[in-house]
Image (cartoon, rainbow, N blue to C red):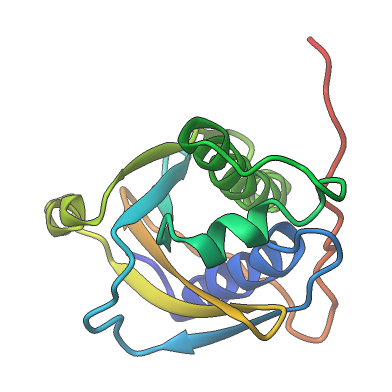
Length: 184
């Protein structure tokens, strides 16, 4: 069971993670909750998980491999930079998802002692029909507008394996630091 305050806290942490992890080259980011995704046109998704003994949280980012999305993820390149090939484009989108979920993992790790994060997987949106098999107690959708031009979507799904109850104080600003590289 996921308590209402834990659901609100998951939401708050993911929104903060999206705002800190989605900008490329200083782009503005706005995130709003949606009741449902409806018939989105994005055909690909990046899926990552943060898991503990008590829950598995799936963060899912929907995108189209079109010219506008490619241009956004190539923004920081030098003038005259080459167009992104498919592999390089998918790597950049996956790394963006990795940064978003890395922030979520860091924030949840401060609350839960044993959390782990998956690597990003890019799959077709049609695979989303199987997410219901996980028995998620929390599913929430988001609309993300990047620099007022590009719209992407995200979904947070949380399956619980016990009582999940924690609180992130809404009056305290959640850190938006994207972290630092760890060397092993």
